[in-house]
Length: 173
Image 1 (cartoon, rainbow, N blue to C red):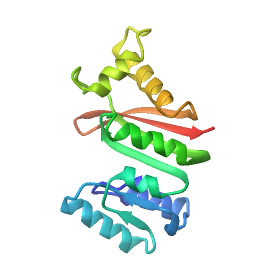
Image 2: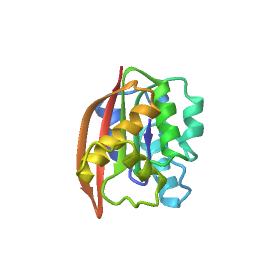
Image 3: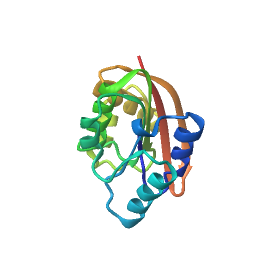
Image 4: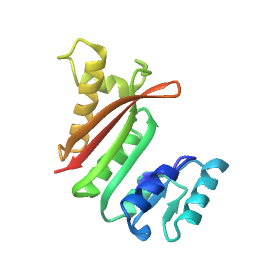
C-alpha cells in the first residue's frame, strides 16, 4: 500500500516491475479530492490493470485490509495525532512479521504550537541539539504508538523543494 499523491509512478514501477507484486493485493490511496490526484489514480489503474485505488481516507482503507507486507506512509507533513499517528498505529498492527513500513515526516519546519512537535520534544529531554531531539523524540513517539513492534532499518534526511524531510524505514519484528 502506498499514498498516491499526484505522481505515483515511481511507487507503481517499484511495486509492479521490481517487486512484481500482485495488483489485486496492492493499493494506492489518497484522500485528496483534487483533480490531479484523481487523474493520478486513473493513470495508476490504466498502467496496472487490477490494482486497487481509493480516493478516500487512509484510516478507513486500512481498517478494511486484513494484512500488509509493505506500506509507504509518505504523508509529507506533521505527525498529527488526528491522522498520521492513528494510521501509523493501525498499519503497524496489520503489518506482517518482516513487513516494511516507510514513514516520511517534516524535519526543521516544526512550530512550537503544533501538538505533534510538542509531543516529540516532550519525549526527549536527554538531548541538547535540536536535530538530535527531533530524531530521538520522533522515534520514541513512533515506538510508543506502535507498541515497540517496529525495528528501525534506515533513517534518511533529504531536501524536498523547500522542505527539509526525513524518511524512516521500519521492519516489523
